[in-house]
Amino acid sequence: MIGVFAAISAAIAVAAGAFGAHGAAGQQEAEWLRTGGLYQLIHAVAALAILGVARGPAIMLLVGAAIFSLTLYAMAFGGPRWLGAVTPIGGTPLIVGWLWAGWLYWRG
Image (cartoon, rainbow, N blue to C red):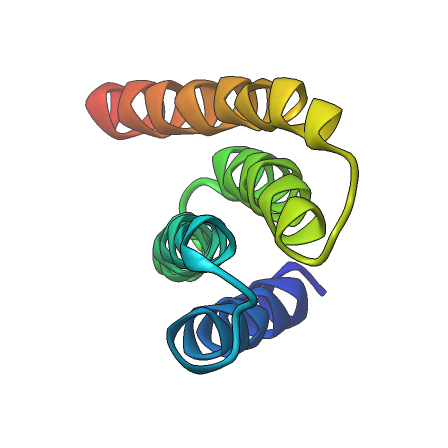
């Protein structure tokens, strides 16, 4: 099921990036879509890559990317600007996921 979520997450990221490039209302909105799409895509692919070895970190990467990216997408589509204060909260599980994965790989 985690792999399904990662694949859907990657598809959403590509759609967000494409919309940011071709249909966003303004420059700021396009940047939010581009940034959200980049982070979401990178972490979806990373989650798929490490899923077999580091299931917990893969979940953390997906959760963090979802929080980070979805708040940016929401603002790009007219959501309240205070969501920008929530966006960095998604960075915490991203950092934890990467550190956890590194620790698991280091332990061997």
